Length: 220
Image (cartoon, rainbow, N blue to C red; front, top):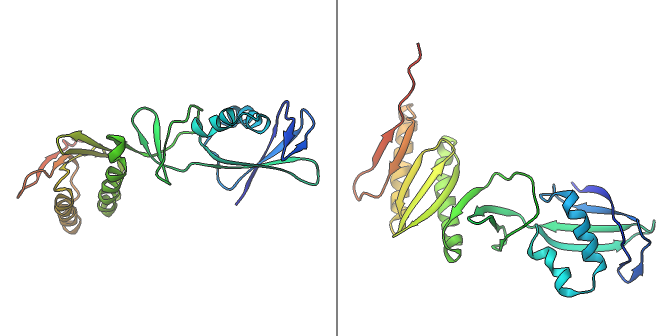
């Protein structure tokens, strides 16, 4: 479903080689709900349309959620601006985001709150860590939990946390083998009908798993 937002833009002078009158409204068209803050986005789109300096025009793509802008004038003499935004799949350290097409962006504009997994590691390994995180998420789906963070701690040590604040510890080299053992543990709990509230699960041992249970409050 397409979304349409009418914005008032000051000092628009040209679009698609046509002269556009000042204080003319334009229609912002997008195929998805906008991540960006509309109030902050409005003047930046206006600057992009009016400015002929390539470096200034490209600034909006480097420091915002916007990935493409297409402006045309319709039969009512209105400007139709169609935008597409980057689709984030994970937040990174330093206020950055990994997008669906594998880019790392650093938007300076305020945006709506995003519920994304946080990935911590070097830029060169972000893709690999996200792949590992998705494998772990598939296992956690068995009991209806979801990851909130996935971090390479260094020295091949990986630490993850879920929405119940359970910590998972892995070694990078043996991650897939350790993941199979975690799956067996979760399936055992599900089949037994008893899901334990774990504080942490350490899978770095070759032939064992260390598990710490959370203390449950006694009810009177």
